[in-house]
Image (cartoon, rainbow, N blue to C red; front, top):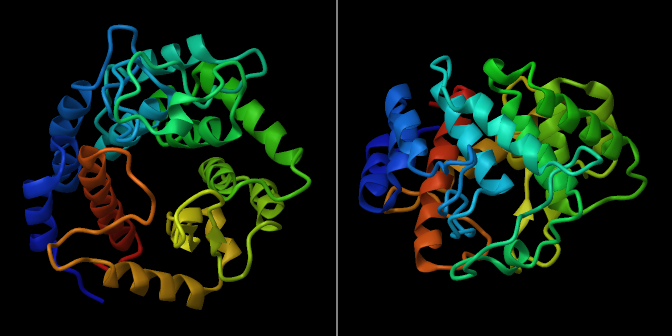
Length: 281
């Protein structure tokens, strides 16, 4: 299997955010400098760091992407990682979960599911995604917020008695994989078919979660859910997803022209990272 890394770099140079160009290049200091451009004085992150949530306010979804960038920069440590966890603790609800989104001041370019979210209700989806990413940062391993979020996620996963939305399964598995809990992985595996393809209710006609969305990390606990031939086929599918312009696409709706390109840049960095993690490149 081969991909054209030069073409991917050219796509990002033409269309990608500075942050994704830096993540692709892998320069830790440059990654941390780029993500700091989205930081707010309260310690959180906003300003469209989540491409379909373009309002300036700090948001849990933007914290997810900030933590991802910080994890990409490891072992270099961001001086703002603990402050971000402090901010997350400040918006955590009494049960230990994060709201799906906080109120936005300007809904321009903001997806309805973000703009209309209930800030008083905890979301397993966003809490699990954010906590999973935070577990990639040793610098915040002992933070009180992460412990609270972890307890919330584990309790909520164990309480599932029927299949939740495909994106909730994806988020919950990312958490179970990050903490290396085979019991949580097994519990969630009840909701995952052998081919690992879960249609996304309410999404586009072709939108689906696939095995490398559910278990992107080679050697991770979640990979045990899939046979080797299933993973191999998905890696080949991902490789073939590189477009003539050098980038990858997404199968979900974007809510502004800027977001559409930004998601493609993000997907390109992600595809290369997964293929590299599996030793394909």
